[in-house]
Image 1 (cartoon, rainbow, N blue to C red):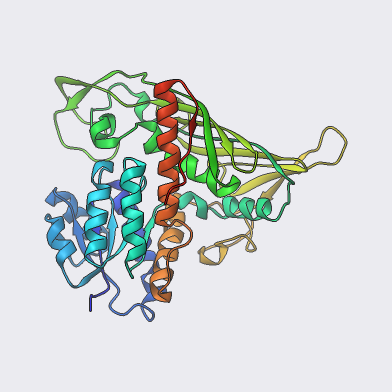
Image 2: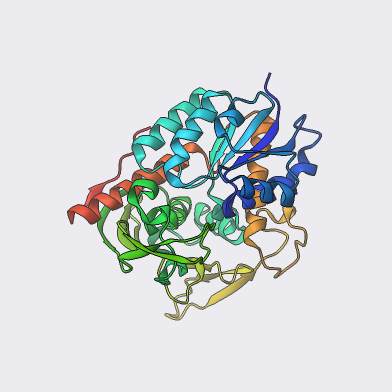
Length: 390
């Protein structure tokens, strides 16, 4: 019988987000999941592992991820590694009988994601992938309105994830800028969230009618010192080519007849780190911007030709509000809090001994299939059907 100790594999900035999510939820599940505790912070960089452990209260550190996966006391694993390692490590953890939460993207491509999904459904343990933006109360409320027919039949979606981090040409070269280690660039790094949001709101995508990708910073210097995340560090004189996209845009066709316009950018000056979307239906429209996370906007068709948008502030009736420390009208939501909601659902599935539904490996697979189709359309200059194989 495996234990229920938690290991976070990958001690960079996203590993810290997972650690925060677990730490926040430990008191809620201590009586429902026996032995639940933060056991091991694992990273090939021992100093990083030590920093994560000291900050969030892990019992120990490790540099050998295979030993962590083999540890019978470890029952819950978060995979927070570079993209190219997601499939290998997630499959190993599933094979070892662990509950696994893998960072997005689930894999570099749909073929790898399909292997993970099939392994996950064959395992009695819980497997999931991180789509934390689904759990922003305003976004979840918008999904509920759409599902209830609150804006009529869907007509079009505009969804974009814009980041500025790579607009700086002096940011050092890293795995993020190599297709062999990251897969597609902005498309996988930030576009995965936008694509999942599109599916979450509007249903399955059947076709990519067209796509365009560009590389705006074509070369970067290698770092002269170690860093994490998007840190700026001293640069060496040696450079490497960037071979994955800085910007990707696409035209989506949904099964239900809705059309969508998608944009992912990591060089969007002024954008910071922003997910935004607007959805129009035959009887209304909804819009959201993560820069103003305390509200969403809705317009109802009134026949006047100038149907106004009304602002709906966060309030205790919205989804996930019961998990907020301050569930009051208009109080903003933070990125870390939403990660906590994601971890809560993962631990709830483990405690209830049921599959993960909202952010399942199937959701990760479906996103990968759409991302593959976007890359094909961009590379070929032709439309691409989206596979729904599972």
